[in-house]
Length: 172
Image 1 (cartoon, rainbow, N blue to C red):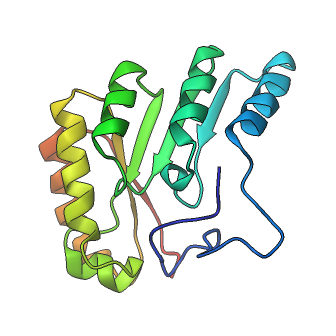
Image 2 (image 1 turned 180 degrees about the vertical axis):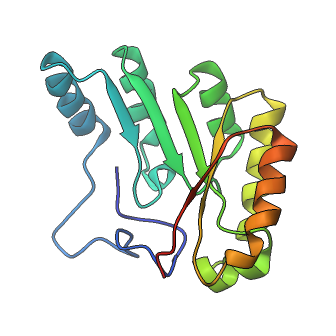
């Protein structure tokens, strides 16, 4: 949906802080029109990602519209922007797959790898809110030299939430 992200992960090749001059994000209507065209040609599933998809100002409208088209909608997120409104949306219209990347098991790791001070605490609050609302999710861990020591703790977090964990290999 957007290359914008509220994290500055050292291994990311997608995110930007601001859009280049003269460019803009597609509107919800533009995304939904594109999805209608693709659905007419046989698309039945879509994954919303970014950057961080929840940074898109019309995320909820896009998400709702895709679901109303009958598409299978998945979301890949860093989890830090999942607020009460997002939890309610995902509770009402559960994603086919909501995958949250857990970059480490401490705020220190998040600061070192993602450039944010309280990233871990924010993501954990989101995970607790999703679990409390019984919104299914899975976790992903991107192993790098900067967070590899957190892998066992991340596995324990996944076990505590009783959710699947996917691990990808060294990128940095």
